[in-house]
Image (tube, rainbow, N blue to C red; front, side, top):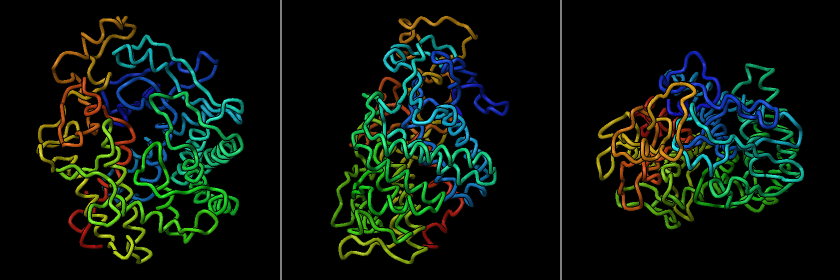
Length: 450
């Protein structure tokens, strides 16, 4: 439901978020194109291409890896709808070859106005990449999103083909015109470069097409590294988990992707000799303040997916000489998700509308602003004192939103001014759906069957 609250554009008749309305209905007009639709990334009203594409790629992976569980939970159609809301937008944004609209909305102006998107007076500035101003990260991530989604929508042949064709062109663009796009800085700077996105996009294109050209790129051209983070900025572990099952090797045969996926697990788990990631006293992964929950859900997601892979190939994770069974990955994933749901030192939920003492002040413009009449003139200068500063619960419940979460000492402040703790993001939630579906449907059998 949180992802539905993030929608921009003309909302469908079955919209479940009654306090949301149509917004951004003139997006793209400045360039005489239609860029309505898509999603706002977090608590603001900007549509950023890189995190939106990662949200869609991970939703598509979720729909594939957890199809049975999502169907049993009655949520598969909702996941498909969330994916399609993103891919419909990407088809508009990628209409011209070697060109992609990558952002709608001036972030600095947007951040100076605390207003719901339905009434925003801020400029809907457009940002693009092309042959002269390349952006390999965003082009490749959008290619990954469309390639992965083309697999999900295979039953709709013409739509699936359109997505796959665009994915191929965008990957070619990312590869041929290499360069980092820093136009989303300081909000979404790609600190990790674009090698991970090129590998990630090639992996999804290989899975979607089984064409040798992508396998060759993966095995010989792509660069792959062992890291301890899976996020909108860093995709290596995601690609490595996908490729581990295929007996493929990276860097011209120097290392198997299985070994690199293992290295990710070994760096995260506290009970291995190669442990790198900080775990709070309460047991939560903590990489950095500011939407830290994204690393909690992304790790839980990869651990559940990888445990299923390991079970299929009948192998453990190898951390040096130490063999880690798939069940340990599931146990750790469950602990991370349980922490967000309430099994933490504060005994509280970090999910809006769920569990004990859930958050009431998400850092989110739409949720914290009352529903205003269409055409209502908002005074940006007064907007913060009216709707941001008051210490009171938001008037609209942002159901299902997972907060940015506690700091490294398990401390949490339920104040919308503390965006590090209380701002939700689409990619925190997109990565939570798979592990939650597995826990809900497999339940007590989750550990027993492994």
